[in-house]
Structures are given as structure tokens and as C-alpha cells.
Length: 398
Ligand SMILES: Cc1cc2nc3c(=O)[nH]c(=O)nc-3n(C[C@H](O)[C@H](O)[C@H](O)COP(=O)(O)OP(=O)(O)OC[C@H]3O[C@@H](n4cnc5c(N)ncnc54)[C@H](O)[C@@H]3O)c2cc1C
Image (cartoon, rainbow, N blue to C red; front, top):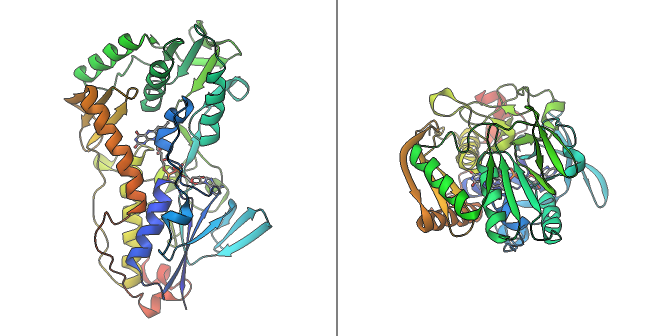
């Protein structure tokens, strides 16, 4: 009997987990199904580039997963029943249900409007490809001198504001940050960011908590009105509500709570990775939603599932950070080196070298999806007989 592994979501983490499992486990012993709503891999870390009109290389899953043994299923996940161990799907043919023995939940996240009035009607988002394409179309119609306001001073906001300002020097680009601009960066990092903002002519509104969005401006909690022909909302990500509707243990924001092997703390046959999961990193701090966290989470989950199925050694890697790689347009960048728990240290890399480094990281992230064992030789292990049968893995190793 084959052990049925279903991976939900083929973003960075789900695709890596599925591919790595296929390289770790013998094809006769497992059936790996990867479910995704779209037929091609979306390089989400480049959505600000898409928004300003850059075209990305198409990456169809049929090519990426050719000859891997991973079965692709193009469908939208609508629900998960962790008691019956089933997944409900819809596709062009209607509804369907798949049964699993092990589930990897990697549905990622979308934008987070945080309930601010007017966002749904007036703001643009770049957390998804449809969102980025919508903004692209809107930016293309803007006349010189019109204002684009990016709300959110985090990594995505910085990347969006600089990308737009570089691509459209005729526009008036501004950014509203809740705190001071780049306040988590080192002094050198902040100084460089300030210089690039100055060079690109970006206005920074600091300590500006946006409390409402209208068609032509935003209002801040301290009573300011900031003009904006277009408002781009980048204040963090929110997970899809599917996990929250299950019996899985989730956080208040709907992330699945997992242990160090990315296994659900409430349901041992469920693993969660990427933005959808709440895992602890160095210093017992929750990992932030990012590829930087999600990629090692996916490796860890795949290796743990393979180990539990084959009787191998569980992975013990501690997830940590090394740097934050921020593109500031195509010609500038900022690599902020950090401690294992993501606090800035003084060292930074800036300028064209940093831009090239960031580009290499983005290319490497996509390469890592197609090469989930980082080019290491494939060693497919046999699944221990007593563990292949439905449910036995969870009970045998819980
Ligand atoms: C503009 C931008 C820049 C970024 N830059 C960086 C960066 O420089 N460094 C970094 O580390 N992180 C960056 N991030 C964050 C990073 O992109 C995410 O943390 C990462 O994509 C999360 O990976 P994931 O696999 O969890 O989810 P995703 O990449 O979001 O993948 C989820 C997948 O699930 C699919 N899916 C969702 N719902 C369903 C459903 N109901 N049914 C079927 N399929 C579904 C989606 O189509 C998608 O393929 C950036 C994000 C954005 C938006």
C-alpha cells in the first residue's frame, strides 16, 4: 500500500517540500500529490517588479515536476477535515475530495488590510500576482506628477516604494511608516536607506499610522491627510482562513502551530510550512513570514516526514537568520546582516553589489524550488512496511 502524501500549495515552501519528499522516498512506497490553484510557479518575492511592468520567466509546474514522481493537481483547496483526513477541492470539473495519510499544509498568505476602512475599495496590494497585475495596470494609467503612496515601512513596503520610484521617476512616490523609516535597521543601514530615498525623491511620512483609505488620500490616526492617487497597502500578510476552520491548533491569526519538525502540535499527521505555519526560531522567537524562514521550514518538514516513514534520523537543524536582503530598485540594494534571531548587527552591504546579491538570492530561491535537495544526489529510501499503512506513521512516531 502506498502512503498518500498531499501537499497543499505550490509556492516556495510547498513546492520545495513536495520535490524534496520525492527525492527522499521510494516511488513504489509513496504517492505524492501537489495541489495548487495556479498552473505555474509564482515568484512572489518579485511582485513589486511585476507591478512596475517587468515580466517574469514563466515556470510551469508540468516542467518543474516532470519525471519527479510528484502528481500535480490544479485545483482550489476549499476545506480540510483533519479528523477524516480529507481535503476538499474545486476545479473546472466541479468538486472533489482527496484522502491523505500525511498532509503538508503550505497555502501561504495574502495581503493584510487589518480592517482599516477603505482598504478593500481603494487600496492596491502586491502580495499576490492578481494584485500586482492590477496595480501594474493602474500605474500604467497614471499621469506624471500623480502621487503613489505605499503604506507600510517593512521590507515589502521599502521594496515597493523604491521599485516604483525608480521605474516611474515622473511620479510622486511616498511611503507611510508606522515608526521611523527603517527603524529596525543598523545605523549604517538606515543611513543608506535614507540616501536612496533621497536620490529617488521618495517622501517618507514617519510615525504615520494610517487609519482610513479614501480614493485620493489616506487619513492617519494623528489627524493628517496624505494625498494618494494610488495607495499600495503592504502592512504585512494574513493567512488564508482554511486552517482556522479545522480542528488544528492555530494561533489567533490562523497560523498552524508546529513543533521543531514542522509537525502540527495537535494532529501528528499534519505538517505546516511557510507563511501558514507558526514555528519558533532562534531565541524562541516566532519565525517571520518570509522565504528566508519558509525554505528551511520546508526542508525540515520533508526530512522529518521521510525520517519518520523510513525509520531514519529526525532532522535537528535550528532555524536561524543570517541577513535581510532588500532590493531598492534594480540598481540599489541593502543587505542587513542580523543575529540568529533576526536583530540587525552593524554590518551591511549596499549599492550595486547589494542589488546583485539580492538578485542572486531571488534567482537562488526559484532554483531551490526546482532543486529541492540543492543538487545533492537523490537517495530514495524505502518506507518501513508498518508505517506505510494509513495512520500508522502518526501513531508509531507521535
Ligand atoms: C512583494 C513581495 C516581496 C517579498 N520579498 C521577500 C524577500 O525578499 N525575502 C523573503 O524571504 N520573503 C519575501 N517575501 C515573502 C515571501 O514571498 C513569502 O513569505 C513566501 O512566498 C511564503 O511562501 P509560502 O510557500 O508559504 O506561500 P506562497 O509563496 O504564498 O505560496 C502559496 C501557494 O498556495 C497556493 N494557494 C493559496 N491558496 C490556495 C487554495 N485555496 N487552493 C490551492 N492553492 C492555493 C498559491 O497559489 C501559492 O502557489 C515577499 C513577499 C512579497 C509579496
